[in-house]
Structures are given as C-alpha cells and as structure tokens.
Length: 169
Image: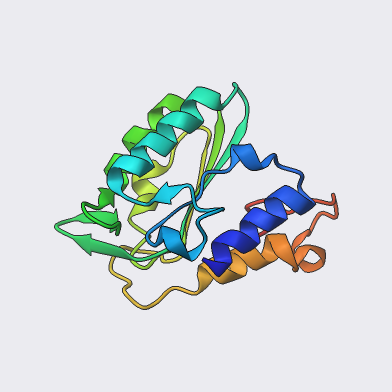
C-alpha cells in the first residue's frame, strides 16, 4: 500500500496527472477506502483495463504497476490475486485494446520474469522484478522503482529533463 500511494502521490503532485486517470485496486480495500477504488479480483482488474482502454486517447501513455506476489507453474507466470489469478497471457489479452497507446507494464512481484516475453511488443515497455519466472525470493524492486519517481528524482533523472522515465527509474 505504501508503494502504491507513494507513486500515486508523485503522479498527481509532482507530475500533475489528474487523479481520475488513476485506478488503484488492492486486496484489502479497508486499508484506504478513499483511494482504493475496488478489490483486486480478476473481474475488477479486467474491468479496470476496459475502463483505461475506453478513456485512453491514441498516443497516450499508460502505466500498469503490479505490486504483490507472483508464481510460476506449468510453464506460466501468474500474478496472484484474491480468487483466480491472471497469467501473463491474460494480461497480454487485456492490453490488446491499447494498441495505439504507449504502455509501460511493470510487474514488481516475485516470479515476474516470465511476463517479459509474453508482453513484449510494439509500443510496450515491460519491466519485471526478476529475470525469470523461477525466482521466488521476495522482490524489493517495487520500492526502489517507486522511490525513483517520488524522492529520488534528482538522482534518477539521468538526462536532467525534469522528469523520470521508466528506463531511468
């Protein structure tokens, strides 16, 4: 929750992204019922992607950040959700309607490396916390990624353009 809200605050305060352009789903909505739009179930994630696809204009930039736990089984990487999980292939399907947008997909979970090959393509930047789906240790990458946008901007902004890119983060 702290990583998510830190990034949301940086996006709205520092980068002036309108709050209505942010969809925050979480497992426990009671942690922050004002900011958390809904529970992070498979159905709600699918609905959130449909909403983004409806709202996004051609050439808009879309950031998807997954914070949590992942698994790798039977040759498939998954992001764990309350109820049925979504696989990397499921996320690829959800990204299809965003064909004219630039999408940065960041999976900060364990076992996230399997998302790279599945989601990579024209207009997609894919960043994962692990190199393969078989890396099960707790991932701390998400905290550093978020920090680059929040308080680490001076160090992270390598080209000194006043903004931190996903690559710089």
